[in-house]
Image (cartoon, rainbow, N blue to C red; front, side, top):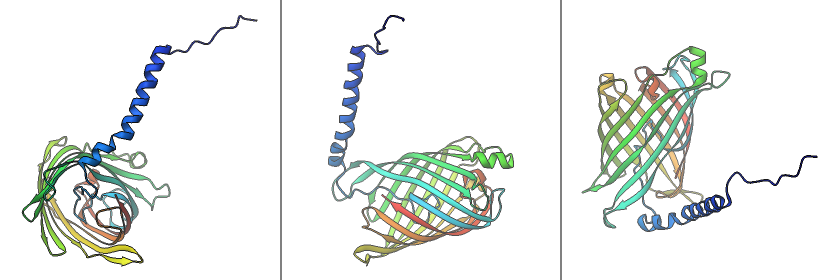
Length: 290
């Protein structure tokens, strides 16, 4: 029998104690960190939101769309969008009456073919960035700076032998919103600061949002929301693309909301991998906003 050997930890005891203390400190920091944030960000602090009909959806979104003009090699058929994207306020500046908010946003939006037996992933687009928003007079203004990238799905590449387009960019956008009753006219102008494809860089968009007054479904506050969004870019010779959305939104306007609605799009692809191709679809969506 070999002599009994006492097990020796690969981590010295002093190092293990230091590691344990560091982990405890990290845990305390994670628990306590929201407390100062609550002092900086009073309840109800609103983050910047894209127009109601923007094809770059925000929130937790699921869509099923009937594609009559397909931009990918799948062509027409039934497809699904899955979106996980949200802007969260991280800093509030200024007084109580006209505060300015700094937000951090992350998002991913993926498109799947439901006509394909394997429900192949066609593409997925990613964004991450910051924005600053506030009021100047009656107008709401915002500036966004974000990184954007786009990727083809592995199954799509395997099936059609297509190479990924290097859509990797840094974008700066400015927004102005002018309210008129329950509607808001929103105008945006921007530029691509860094572009791996060397395309023309100017961007523009115009949108009209409508957010109805609160009614109730049972005891839950509810309202009709609708919007139309038109965008164009120098990279595609200012060809117009238009998106439409109408939905019933449940929940308080400043809190968590659930929306059931209809969406439509006609123009260039909303998937960056196919940015030069024509796309047309109509569909339904369910959306949960934080």
